[in-house]
Length: 155
Image: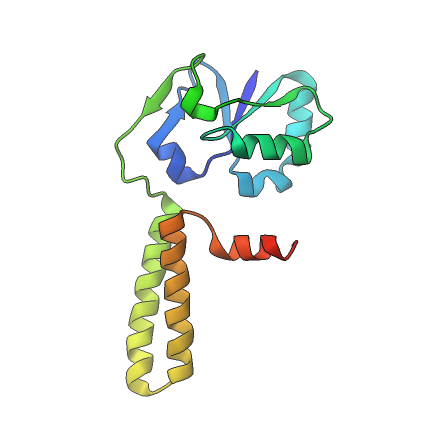
């Protein structure tokens, strides 16, 4: 059996499965559409369990992409309810590389906004402020705001 962990990097930093007790592959949910063939090929030889934090996302992915494949299942209750495998908990900040990059980019935009303000390009300043708000919103929600907006458009 292979477990595909659908959680984001920052979620895995808080808790993850001990890979010495089972085969675990991390494919964040945003990357599933690009890995459908890979997962289908894995399911030819092994049973695949999709796992997330609570089982909601894995259930959605199972139904959307692997509904007819009986060898791909959703792990009920996710990592919260897991009992068959060892779960390793950590006390980190919960921030992954994506969040650190967003903080760095926000700092660059803040500096850029200050410079632009004193130069007088007010439209550029307004755009930069909007970008800073979006970045901090992404940090707060720990999800990609732009990706969600594109999702509502059906893209």
